[in-house]
Length: 428
Image 1: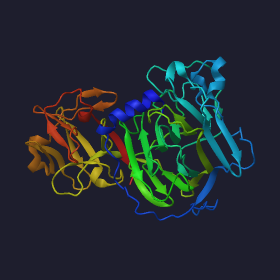
Image 2 (image 1 turned 180 degrees about the vertical axis):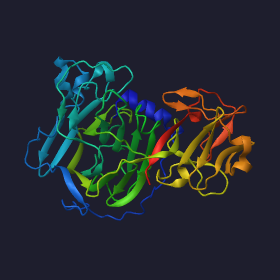
Image 3 (image 1 turned 30 degrees about the horizontal axis):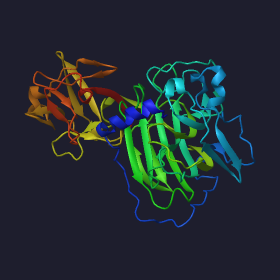
Image 4 (image 1 turned 135 degrees about the horizontal axis):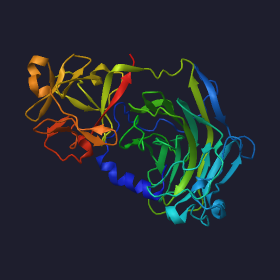
């Protein structure tokens, strides 16, 4: 998930990232005066698939590897990847200590991490563009999964200063893009918020750019236990705080992922202060499967048009003639298009209205074939990485200015904001 080089890139890029606000609910004044109690183990409509309640005093090493990405360090430095933790009274306390060495100073500078992982394999999560696998280790798979309802009850660190705690998922397919979901990525310096992030890392079926949100939360997350949940389906990621929906991301990875639970310093969240140790306390982690299953069926006809630079899709909500860009559910017909190619050009017809995407001056609109005329005819030159441009002789579609509308201008072909990808829409 996060190491200093990677996170630095993320923070630099965040100003250009579209906040995922399709279903963002800011929680109001403090509604919890004490710990949020643990939920019952049984969840209606779901079957428990993985459970770690942290009973006893030892870690279950059939489920967890207590080391952080150890394949990236030489064998002689394996000990530097070891987590520092205590299990007692039904919780795990992950710690970063003052005398703890960086896990990989050669490739990741001063980053210190105490982590436990349900999965590990060579070349898993290449945390920067030049990371070298230094230790060929056997694959460990205590648990990896695709889709599910993830629930963690935790008390965040009260150390303040630089550092953060994280619960995150990384795709296990090391031969392709390894998608990442940062279910929890909360900085010590912002204790009353919940930071959530996701990125496809080259996965052609997930986000081509970072989705990043910091959600205000109620209560006192550093002195109380609260329940953080994520419902991962084939088309959405929905995030809940103490049972209340706070964020919906209308995209989702469609590959198996492993889980990492850890606490960091030196990973792009500021300089650590003099408070030691820094501790994150976790009560439990549970993963459930929906008894109704998870359909991955896709339409053979209808496509979503996603952007390389920003999270979202071309759509026509609220059907006022203008073409919008943003996060809408992929099941919405307003965001589904069929490309119709003839005589070397392509037209894009919307499923909801049966109208075509066309340009009128600098406005991108949708209308009937008669109204659109030749302004609905587009060329689609390759932009690399599985993306194309949608352009005509005068310019190209883009979302550079993040206006909520699809823009049109004569912009550079190097702009990722003018790169588009057609993705099969869900069958519905």
